[in-house]
Image (cartoon, rainbow, N blue to C red; front, side):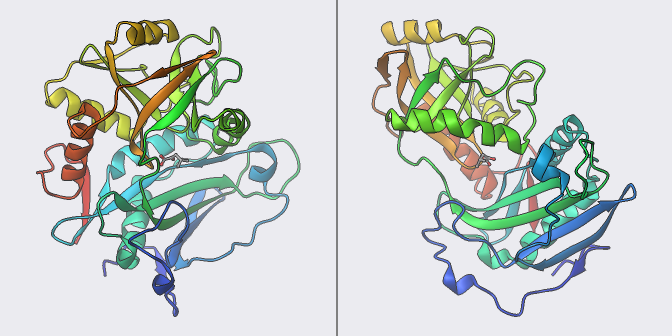
Length: 355
Ligand code: COI
């Protein structure tokens, strides 16, 4: 096993892998044997270690619990066709984590610490990387303010942790989404582009309301006019209208999704016209009326591509045509799968292979 300099290793004496069903892992059900932890104290990241997964000691006065300085990433490691393991877009996730940390006044993670800790952790738990199509080892790096102090202030101490677990894609079946006109996910000048925990907690209530009305997720609109589409639940959103891939342009209220970025690169390479721009609810309605909209889907690490069957707009439901393997979203997903499992050459240098 590759040992990264400066990271202490304490392997478990009792693996739990036999208790997990890697052929049917669900999402978030199983945690792998090990986790990574590291502390930021006196202006330095220190005490980096890979240890058995387990509970952590945390002060009830830890600032993250009170004032929400907490950010995370969602990434995946794949079993390649030759048996090796690939962490997908390691560098892009590192950049995004640091952008989130910056917004929340939290210290940046050096690149070697981020990449080294993930490589070491995935390596030690390589048997947890599932093999079946549409499965992966989900990687969850997160950083939280761990200084114990009640005063409302920026923390001076932080804890960086990575946990992992086998998963399959969420939303394998087409979903129903509701255009949200009352609640918002993010506003201009806010934290919408950052992957901070509060964005997710604040979305629970509107999502519960939508679920009670028979939807799987909400389709967020902008905070000012409730007119322009932003994201769908915890994913970016894409539409195929007039054979063009149209997705909301990035802004400070939209997460710079890594799957979004990868699909756009692949779509352009496949000769598809891609428009990153504002897309209004009225434009969507018109596209349904004219039958020019043929596909709608969410794009995210956990979901990969989540087909949307129905969009509820105000009091009406609009249905997408039935999907088949020939849809653009599935062609894009197949290319993405092929790239990250080594069936296709890694021309974009997105893969970080663990031998
Ligand atoms: C992801 O898609 O990886 C996310 O981070 C969204 C969610 C699972 C929290």
